[in-house]
Length: 400
Ligand code: FAD
Ligand code: SF4
Ligand code: SF4
Image (cartoon, rainbow, N blue to C red; front, side, top):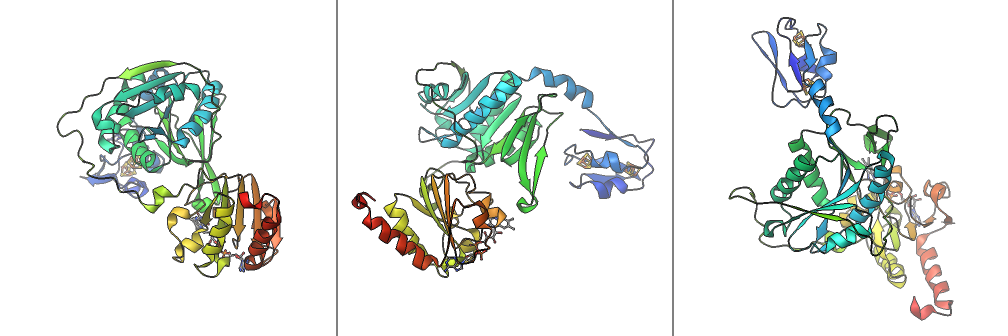
């Protein structure tokens, strides 16, 4: 337990009960009792007017921190192919490891995917911890959690980064709970505090209106998930070598409580906004769902894909898989067309790092023009056909 009640000092005032955000405190015989739901947040310590609650394990935790070394990146792979977010995390991990002065490692799980270790070394990993087992061929929460938790316990990394993919969002919290540490989800910026060498994890809070920087001072490892498309990819150094550490994993009957019967790919997995070089995105300014057909024409000619604002998704015009923004996908294409999109902060959060932003909007005061490289004030139903007409006139038009 991270906090404890000093029974003699407790006056039974119940202030702590009300202060606990996790309803972890109950009263028994007029004394406060801390339950198993306690996360150690410390709110009750502050709330007690009689100093009857104290942090229990600060000394032990502080002593343990020095045993943790190295930055780990979860090398997510699917069907033997490394996910791009793993390369982005290696890019970010390199900076963090350099700021701390420690090694950068990748942790890879799968069945017969040892070959990916070469790729991870070339992208900057000094070491690759590899867990190979038939049970790790398909992702399951139990199998991956067990394999990586055991590796964390044995090798003690100080930082563990995961992509905020479906798998990372599932695996990260499970690992954090087992390791009795914290996890900051959906980070957009990671930095090392030069004094403490701890990680400062920044993420949007309160609907994106505020950026919160979160630290994990008393527990290890420090864990973050990072959205795909946010961090710069690591550059590849062909032939770069590293150390492969094979993990021993074995599973007993009952360790894995789920069984994957079949994998059915949904629209979501077929839409790859993060890899697209050109995105033609539409919002409520389209006026109707059919408007996306016009966007598709331009996207196809530029070998790109369509996307949308959340308002268009909420209106039922297009699947959520196409949504760009804070609660959708973060994208970084070479060209981003924002057609009939006002430029709300939550949308901009997901596309502001695009190479060239071209905005088309009838309202010249629309906030999207503040971040656009090229702003066209006009009706998208006139502007887009005009753009395609001009493209037809180009000498190599047949290639577009
Ligand atoms: P509107 O704001 O209605 O803008 C439509 C624009 O089209 C206007 O600027 C108008 O001038 C222009 N227009 C109209 N007709 C035409 C025409 N014929 N030609 C050209 N322009 C025209 N939004 C996201 O997009 N992604 C997110 O991930 C996201 N997450 C959110 C999370 C939270 C917690 C909250 C509170 C909101 C979130 N939103 C998100 C919603 C966001 O705040 C906006 O409501 C949304 O982005 C607006 O979508 P829009 O620009 O398509 O619509
Ligand atoms: Fe006891 Fe302090 Fe809780 Fe009051 S706030 S019930 S004194 S522990
Ligand atoms: Fe509740 Fe936080 Fe106190 Fe634990 S430390 S009992 S979670 S207020």
